[in-house]
Length: 323
Image (cartoon, rainbow, N blue to C red; front, side, top):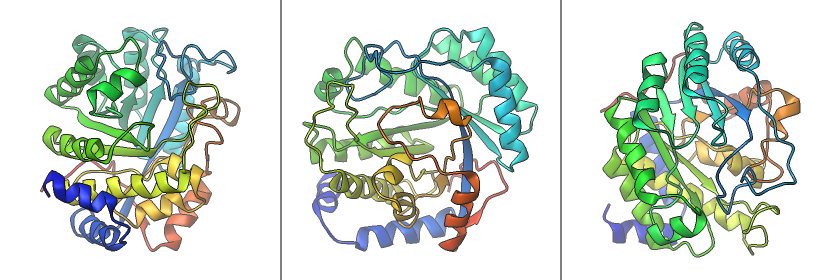
């Protein structure tokens, strides 16, 4: 697909795109769904991204940090529940230094699980240390490849550094994940097409697509957004990504389920093959408010939904098998 073809599909209201993406998903990655247990271990963040509820300038949030022991215990509970991947996610919180994080990674790897990190921009040296400690995957969403939009949304951050981080992760041998927010104010269909082409250029191993949901405690909190339209457009971006990158892992994101009670199911029927159940303890998961009213299905509830659409839950770690 060329850029013009992608734009045409993004502007279409046809459901044929979703059917095609689902067929390719079935052919190249099968009917298994990979469950990846998400531990949101800190909601402190040094950044001021204009769309995110964790932003440093948000004073109306209860901040928390889990201890290393608490994180490891949650990972053990996830492993005991049958999860084969643990995802460690936080705001950009410098409290957790390289030594502390490497210790946590090493202890979780003893459980015989894959470890994914989603902790923001770090130095090449830090990324290497985490890899040497046993980290397998790293998720760093570009959010948008439109440089002007990126700079407007991310004060005091560098688009070029974000890109460099992604290529450093690839060079170090991580399964590298990225992705974008869909439906941002001043975002164009053309820039979404560029996002998709960037995913292909990077040869990303995982892509997370999320519809933009305004958070009231952010500069974009009063954005006049049609959430259902955002959901449809984000699933279209995801479906085209599946068509172009046939063998990668694509999650049905929590934001989709937050907008629509069957949002994850719609995504799973349109090319997605990963679900990330939140295994953070109930007290703290409510405070990880990137956007409001975040859906937090239990493992049992998720499993039932997946079985009801005829998909099976994988018992493997779910690494990408390149075609």
